[in-house]
Figure 1 (cartoon, rainbow, N blue to C red):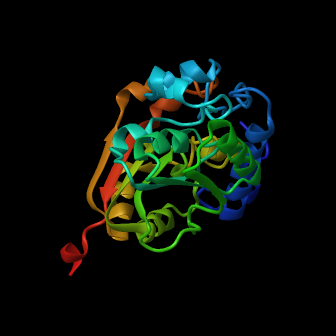
Figure 2 (figure 1 turned 135 degrees about the vertical axis):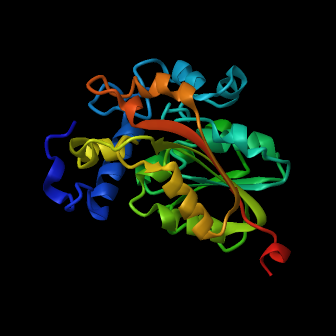
Figure 3 (figure 1 turned 90 degrees about the vertical axis):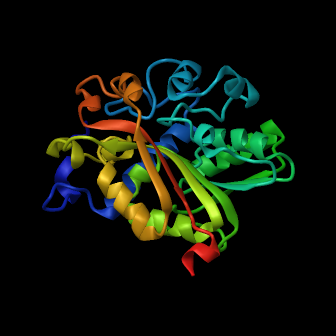
Length: 282
């Protein structure tokens, strides 16, 4: 845990939005510029990755050998908590938007699914990550993938231009998750869908963790409950909302921090929803 925890915390022990964004950006800038996969692991609260190789860590998250072999080295940083492309049911020709795209691993997997007639856009708020992802575009010869610098609360895409929104253990990092879902809804075409892997809170997070910048940035203390997430999604306009906790994720979540049993209060989940067709709204 960080020793500078509570200076920017509110009366409930939560970090203010500016401190939270700064902690997240600093953490992922370090990861992007470090050499080697999972270079940030081994630090306190080193979640979203573990001490194994990126390959074995990614297999624990739900990726197949074929996924790992399909993408050139440098894109898979082992930073997620699931495999959103496995729940997105992507089709040829679709346009996919990845929130918090990192070095681009899920984007390159999605590009294989949507084909040359499809398109994949990754958005990340960390300039160093966007630079790394753009380098990986060249490595992977991914002509239908692009990366944009931006915040997931205010996505740099036009209204109703996206078929599928995916994300991997990133929305929990946002200080305004409701706005993330509202803007994802805005970006989706009618009939479009959301397919997200993220952590959810199953029990109250200890105060000392909730107020710790490193814990927030490491996908630990920013999680919301299933009920809170469901309410956010419904309020944003999504239909057919599904939030399915994955109990098997306890195994890798337990490895995120050696000093505390994180699986006692967070678990990975598959989060899905659908933007209704126009005739369903009218």
